[in-house]
Image 1 (tube, helix red, strand yellow):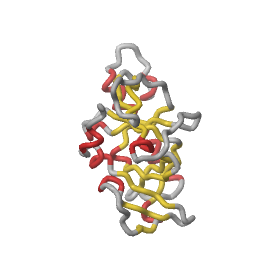
Image 2 (cartoon, helix red, strand yellow):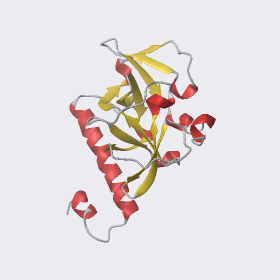
Image 3 (cartoon, rainbow, N blue to C red):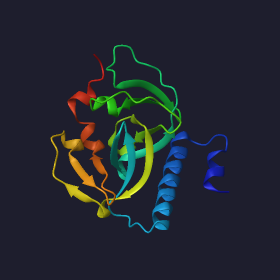
Image 4 (tube, one colour):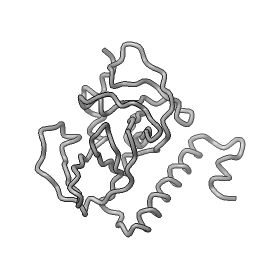
Length: 183
């Protein structure tokens, strides 16, 4: 019986199922990277946050799920979209583009919700306009640091001249403003 068949069996433990799903996603990303000839080190997930190209460390990412409606939370900041039920867990969904001072992200067919890895200890997810796939840091040129919070100050430029911002979610979850979603 395959792992996915086991996941569908009645009585499966939800936590165990999520763990197997995460292992499957990591294995899938590994196979995609192997096919494209990328090495494991320096591999990041490229996402579009509003109009900004961002890189997420794969060890800080939980799941990538399609957009689903969220339940708004009264008296929350405009960048805190509300709560979504993601695999049986209530997860806070953040519009990172809005959090960064840009325009609100309008959910569309390409929009995805990227959850934080369980190791960060923060049940949260980011709404991104699009997932752009795996990127290799070794193929990018680091740029001088921009005036930005520490969690998004690393800047890169790829071979096509496109600018990328590397996001450190472990630092983001410690930022006082991020932790204060209420008005």
